[in-house]
Image (tube, rainbow, N blue to C red):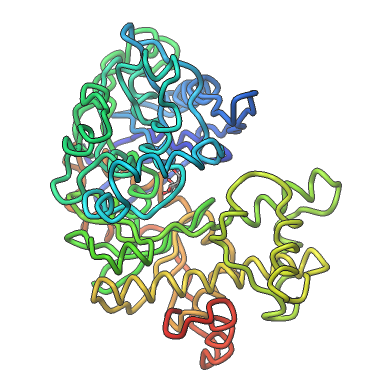
Length: 491
Ligand code: LFR
């Protein structure tokens, strides 16, 4: 075929979408078939994902997608780390926990008492995040559900299980669990043993491009997709799919996958597992084709989105474009926060937490909404600067340009501030990087596109990109960076 149609199920922290992609040798068009909210639910024992609503949203979206004609295959990606546990009959044990649930706070210490943080890093290469799967499992230890659990499925693998009946663990997402060996690219049997985890809990690994079964008859009937429609394994960690779709055509690029999180870093051939890297909290997640996503999680648009949710609840204006216009006029560098401060992780009143942070650190407390948004965006730009400088240093690499992809690439002010703060040109777009990466990996599995470089060339030649040149000589940013992190040389 000269062109084919693929469906991407792409679930994000606040909404899910089904996107239809039409791929040809020289063209690549996306249409959104369906969008539905992802609303976590707080139960007495913690914050949960409504995974049944998400699955139903995916089914409804696939039904819409089926109307656009023959869908050659389906791929699924979501955020990482979170998972469902199945019992011996294959039934889901409770609703999966949300990674922003605070019950894991004490669990890390228990894991560290069995395998120290230094050694854990040498094996898994993961930055310390309190919610990593291994800590979630430790937090659930002793519960009836944990005892009954026979199979752990990460969220995309759980949805695929319900679509096809097949069981597997996609490797880019498996690499975020803290149970995966960064060097060998397999589950770490050594860790499993030392943490007394049953190796049978973890399904066989699948790589992006591998077949993941065909739709179950009732799924095919409901959606109207053909009964033999295959589900193709994609880079099911949304960040891995987004990095596939970075439109880089030359080496020495950095990327920032900017959505709820900002994931800022480099694509490497091999993990960096040094003690310096651990101290700087860099992660070595697995990308497509054995690449390493060497990056750091930065709190990202979450800060802004959570401010907007708070203002909306308080009946204050919360329209993004108006807030960004106010922020553009607000005084530069009036107040700065470290976006990665743990106090910002949980849902709740974000403007209050930002004001508290500024008060506690002896800065001007931002009064207006515009001042708060300015503070958030400058702080994110500074965090981007810090992460990329450190990544380059720790990996011994140069950076000539930054590709900023994902929903955040629509934010003109953030793109410009990132260019200014880093002193590097920023290429913004595509906004739909994750869905594009999902679709291209499916297209590659059918032989329609070639290797990673080919996929990226196709993105670069078909998607709308914007270019930002750094303004000024960087002096003000250097001073701002020093204000936030007094340790010299670190930003
Ligand atoms: C981004 C993301 C990050 C991961 C976080 C939690 O959507 O997948 O890469 O660290 O969500 O799973």
